[in-house]
Image 1 (cartoon, one colour):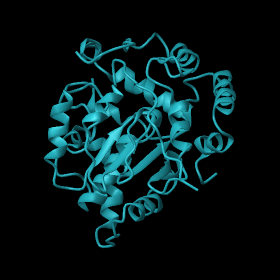
Image 2 (cartoon, helix red, strand yellow):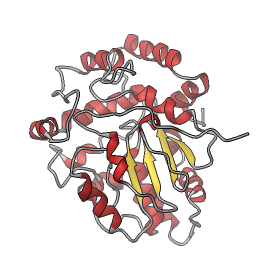
Image 3 (cartoon, helix red, strand yellow):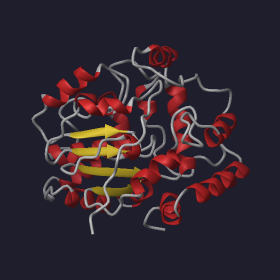
Image 4 (tube, one colour):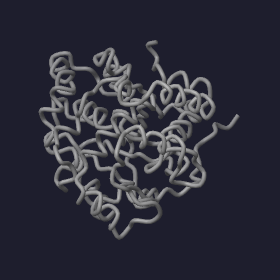
Length: 307
């Protein structure tokens, strides 16, 4: 029986991303593509991949110069491709594109990072409020911007959550405003979990045992573990270390996107939605996620593999 492969059937374009930018990309054998909806551990996984690729606690230069977000409207795509083409190391690249809008390559290694949607929202709320007003305006005024704009954050998190859970930026989604759907994104990747070149990693599992999860990722990437440097690699990707090194590890620093670079690494915890959202909102999220996700994905996003 022929293995079912992903097909690109959607075009995602708004103030933040344009999935068509992937048309300019030419993969190399062994490239690593890190994918999350957003605020699910993307930057953490970039730090882990940097530690494994370079075998040192932090990358040699800023992550933005090693691991660009291709679908983002932050810079002309020819500049991004030129940066990638100039890299001699094994490349690890970031995307937030759902798989139904992405080009699929069978010669790369994908790492999907998942997280409970309520924790994603809580982290996104901090992220959104840490963006400078000028940074948001620049995104909305970018030449490549089409479709929905990125508004400035509303007055409170509960109002924003209600919109995020009930309104969409794209006709084929039902939630995720003003970004894109965390639920739909996850399902598009989970539908192809049978493929050997997609690894699923959960934020909660990384929190519970970073060492073990890094070893699993290292094995998947065919990178041998060097026990003489391994403890320093694990320490280098700790939340404390990455927050202290935010000027190098956080994305968008050179463009002045953040009010506070270190605030990009806010808490690195789960259950932060409690106290930010009401219990009723939490239950509503659970009901909607259960309705819109396959049962196994719903369970995994809620708890990871270490329930």
